[in-house]
Length: 77
Image (cartoon, rainbow, N blue to C red):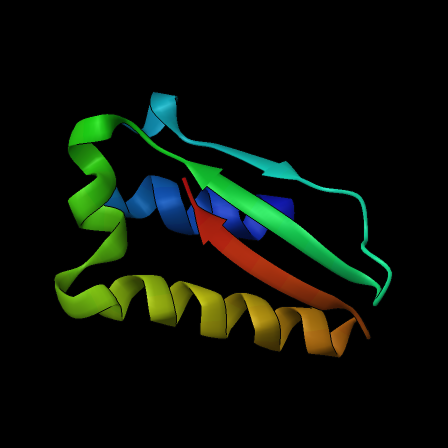
């Protein structure tokens, strides 16, 4: 899952070397939270107009997680 998020984020930003993804331990409900970190000037590119790109990233990640019987959340930091 981590590799998927890194690949998506690197394709969207101008500074792909600044992209990193961290993951938290599963909470009591079994949900894993992934945090995408990008350069400050790339935040607009990863979020998109009215959050459309961020929503699309979350949708793709959730779909991949469902195939693996996982629960995830994606946050953009």
